[in-house]
Length: 178
Image (cartoon, rainbow, N blue to C red; front, side, top):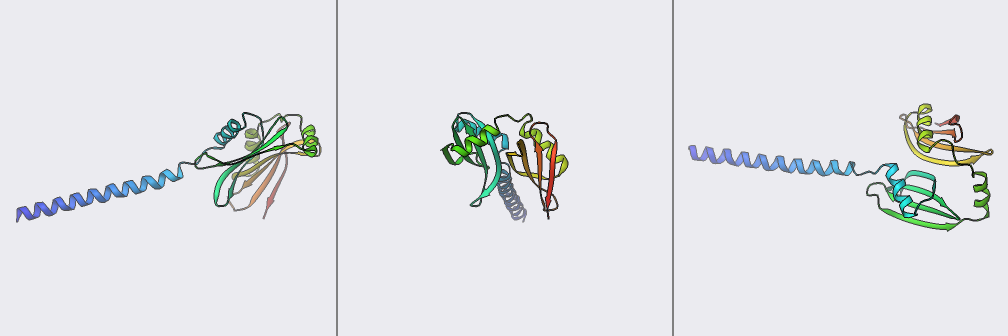
């Protein structure tokens, strides 16, 4: 009788250990998936390496064909680059290179002045006006001044667009869609 009890206890112990190990393995796989998203700064670095430098004119996190990706626009010399980067792996999904046309040249002359504040500073300013998650940023020329347009998804499922003056860092406007 002692032998049967010992065998059963051993079987239960081994089975329990096996189930615990399986559960732990399964959990570690699911947590790894959520930890592989790269930061925006890393996406910028990857894009600038691909183009061998340049000026980032726009970066946004978007979902295209079910893939969450950073879309990075870069200007360098007389060329424009569009670099799409998988936000999970950091791999370049798509790379386009184009010559600038006359319209681009006119826009560049208007924007020839570099922004006095960084995109990161503009985002911090925008998040003070509208709390949430930044989903798109653009550097644009509006009424003869350089403006950061920052789109923010708010906690109450609305979208806010905050315009920040790229020269002095002041908030120009805040628009909240219903």
